[in-house]
Image (cartoon, rainbow, N blue to C red; front, side, top):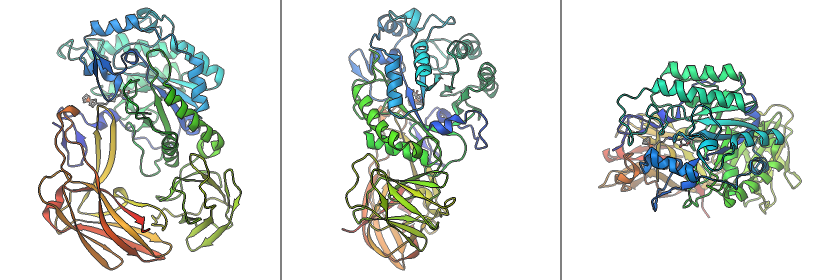
Length: 589
Ligand code: H79
C-alpha cells in the first residue's frame, strides 16, 4: 500500500518514488549543449514497438493505463512476448507521413523509442537479434527511414533508450516473472546490450539530437556517468536528458505530464501523453483536444520549457487518425503564431488569471484562454509606457494605461481560433510585476503554491487513475490548530464581488472540519466535509486516489484598487487531514 510522506509525495511500498522515475539533473545554469532545444519548444514523442501490436490487450483482457507496460502488467513470459515479434508486420508505416505530421503540427524535433522496457530494438542491431529487422516479418528499419525523412524535412531526431529496465534480459532490471532478481548482473547487461546498442544508434543514423534515457532506478552514479560519456564521445552535440539519473544530463525532463507553476530557469522539457497512454491502446479515446494541447504548449513555453507531446502509432504503423487530426489543427494555430512559440521566452508576469504570456525581445504575446465578455482585458502589473496592442487576425486595440496596469479594449466576440493572441509592442524590455492579481470578469484561482505559509506545508501530490498515467497537484497541508495560517497577497484594480470556492481533498472519514477565512476586514467561518477516499488495490499499491472537490463558501466583496490579503486557518484539529489546492474567486453573475 502506498503512503504519503511528510513531504506529501506519494511513495510506493518498495521505496521507489515518483522522483526516482522522474529524475532531475539539478542544472539551471547557462546552456552549453543543445541551445536548439530553446528554439524548438514543441516536439513529437513517439512510443512504438511490439506493444503497439497488442494495443493494450492480452488474451482478451484490456489493461487500462500505459500500454507499453503490457508485458509487465500481464506478466507475459519472454518466450510468449517474442511471438508477438513473429507477427509484427506494420506495413502501413510511412516515415515521411509521420515526419510531415510532426511538421504540420508545428513540432521541430522527434524523439522515438529505439528500445523501451520490453527490450525490443526498433532498429537493426548487431548486438541482439531481438530487433525489428531480424525478429519480425517486416524486416525494415524504421529508425533508418525516419532518420532519412527527418533529414529531408529538416527536423531533428532523437532516440529513447531504456537504460535500466529490460524485461527481455535476465541481467536487465524489472522482469521478475521469468527470472529471480538474485544473480542478476546489471553491469553485464550494460556492457553487452545497452552500451553497444546506444553506440549503434549514435553511429548508424547520422546526427542524433538526443538520447532520451528513462527510469534510472538502481543505476549507480558511475554507470550513469559512463553512459553520458559514451554519448558525448560519439556525438558531442547529442543531448542527454536528466533521466539518465544521479543528477547527470544536459537538461531536465520533468515528471510525466508535469507543467511547473512558475517560470523555471535552465533547459527543460515536459513530456506529455496525448491520451492516457504513451503506446497505442485500442480502448483509450481520451484525447486532449486541440485547444487543450495548444494551452498546455503555451503554459510550458510561458515557463521557459519545451513541450514534448506523444503519439502512439498502432500495430499497422499508423498514427491514430483522431490524434493526427488534432495535431494538424494545433499546427495551424502554431504556424500562425510561430514567433510566440518557437524560440519565445518566458512570461515576465506572475499568475495571469485569463491566460499566459510568452515573449520575444520587446514584444509580449498575450494568450487569452478566457475571453472577457466585458470588452476589457486588464494586463495586471504592466508598468511600461507607450504600449501598442494588436489582435492577431484583427486590428489595433485601444490601450489605456492605469496605475500599475494596462487595459485593452477588445471586441466583444471571441475570435474564432484555438487561443486568441494579442501582441504588445513595448518601447523597451517589459517593466512588469510578478504580483498576483484578482480581476473582475475572470475566474481567479489562488493556488496553493503562491500562498504565504505559516506552520503548514506545500505538498506535491502525484497519483495515477489507471496505471502509469501520472497526475500532479500542489496542496496546502500539515495544518495545525492554533498555529497554521495560509495567506494570499494580491492586488485588485477595482472593487468586486466574487463567489469563493475551496478546492480540496480530505480523506479522513467522519466529521467535517471548521475553517476561518478573513479578507478585507471581514471574517467568514465555514465547514469542509471529508471527501471519502478509500484505498484502491487496482491502482497497484499506490494507495488512495485524492478526490478533489469544490466547496462553495459564498459571496465576498473585495476592496479595490490596491493590495488585499486573504487568509485561511483551521478552527479545529480535524483540519489536519485537509489538503487545499486552490481558492477560486469567480465573478458573481
Ligand atoms: O515511456 C513512458 C513510460 O513507459 C515510462 N516513462 C514514460 C515516458 C515509465 N516507465 N516507468 N514509469 C514511467 C514510471 C511508472 C511507474 C509505475 Fe509502477 C508503473 C508506477 C506503477 C506502475 C513501477 C511499477 C513502479 C511501481 C510499479
